[in-house]
Length: 73
Image (tube, rainbow, N blue to C red):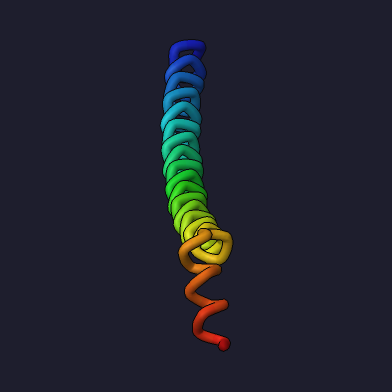
């Protein structure tokens, strides 16, 4: 009788360990996907920042300013 309870306990224990392992794996996948999405968003924002910086540099570039002044005359 005692052997039977021990066997049932071992089966439940391994089942719980396997369920927990599956949960950890799916949580790991969710975190990895979220991290990739955030990384992609960061790259996109950096590209936008570089474009804005180039536009600003073009606006304050002395050659571009003089070209605009000569063009308006």
